Image (cartoon, rainbow, N blue to C red):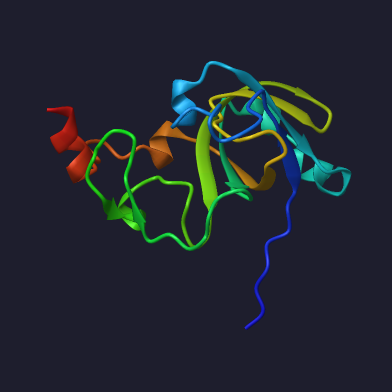
Length: 146
């Protein structure tokens, strides 16, 4: 089976390395830009009608040999699939961002945690009616908050 992912763009952010990036994009008020490559610009038609977007990106500087992780909110080790660690077999980043502006192939957004130069894999519109799951929980995270 042949499988590959082709980037559709690149993220321009103020974060130059992993130490500068927030643990989650929702904690960031910084404005970032997503530059879509010209061959995919047509796919942006009507995106400015969206208030929020789901951005999928390739964490190209993450480790891919990690199956256990210690999240910043907890001193216990968990399986990587029970965390949002960037270090995982397929390091795909996910963020729901606020779309502030579209200028041609450039999207200005708020809510990203990606390092400058991170490849963008896909963009989808976010809808609170479709995507929001009320009362969804991460069990170990709920224990830590207590």
